[in-house]
Image (cartoon, rainbow, N blue to C red):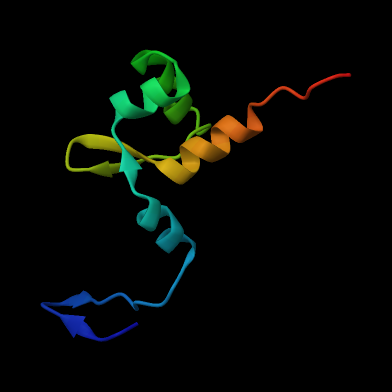
Length: 81
């Protein structure tokens, strides 16, 4: 870690998996619900069960676009010939 400032440990700025999440950005609950074509209540349920990752900024929940895309991809039903 990179030292202390005001009694708090400073974080190392090395690349991590979180960098990919941040670079794609975050969606609001309304944007994510629209993207998945589900209600906001259903989306909150998916977040609460851990099916969709989320972060809290202040009082607002935000969902990483990468997490939404991953959830949509794993929810795809395989095509049968």
